[in-house]
Image 1 (tube, rainbow, N blue to C red):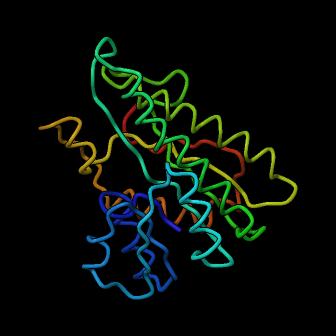
Image 2 (image 1 turned 90 degrees about the vertical axis):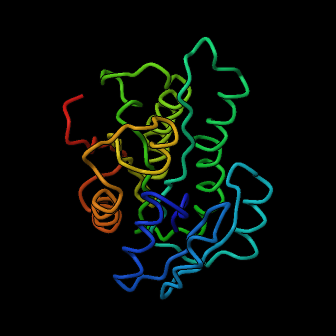
Length: 220
């Protein structure tokens, strides 16, 4: 199960798991880019994860009964000076990055295998002590919430499973990054990052639980 699956890292993850012959549920508000690929064993499902009632309804009526891996990849980024960042801006970012992640995770936990793995995609900007950047007050603080939530959920479910970890990503060249920072080019591409995330989602819980691991080729 992959959220934010219509572009960037999410779409690259869908392609990776399809190529490796996994059954994939690809969630996004806009599923056209996924459907156009016509990938084997991929089912695209249109869902706004920030809509709690919609999430509850679809998980009860349409989602599979057992899930091995959930990758909470959906994200929203606003680049705006703090003085110009309204409560509405903060709410829009937190609704996707924090509340949406919590909505879907809560709804799918009963379907997760005890041996399964939930991977929350956070950010280097959401870790205490790393470099911070102007304009990302809403985004980075939301990812900080994701980081702490990951640790809390792992503690709560450590006796029963599934395992829950977070990956704090550095900058990746995606549409979301380009929209927020026009003209910015970074060395890490979505396909390469998706390859790392996919392998970690399948095997990382053999070594980690409740951890937030930095994934960046630059020094914070």
